[in-house]
Amino acid sequence: MWGLKKHMNIEYKINQTISTEQFVELLQASNLAERRPIEDRECMQGMISNSNLIVSAWYDDKLVGLARSITDFHYACYLSDLAVSLTHQKSGIGKRLQSLTQAQLGPKCKLILLAAPAANEYYQHIGFDHNPRCWVLEPDSRINE
Image (cartoon, rainbow, N blue to C red; front, side, top):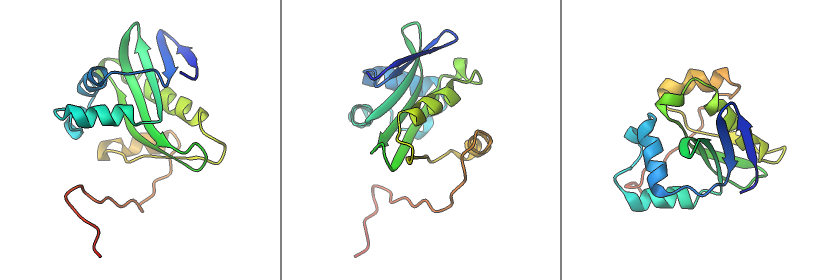
């Protein structure tokens, strides 16, 4: 754990250990479970244990928010998941998770994410620039040689 931050009654933690079950429960409590393979526990365990920057939000001992990233800390940080439980949304937790994520990065490091279509306006509103150059290779596809 690299540090602790408090905001209102929410405690923010950097790289706090999070169990697969806590991760899945948060995804189910937010709107992300429908777009994540929550039934595949091995995949979910790999997602949480192989992330190298996790900023979490806790209400008492309950995980209520998470920004899960993979980064080199100098050039690029891919924010893979931003989840806030529905009971805690619209209270600034998501914005704070992203701000704390950015604070862990070097001064030239870009924060990159893929947004659900319904969230595009949110990210633009908080300062992200839209970039149409993203490409995705699905797991069942192969590189054409």
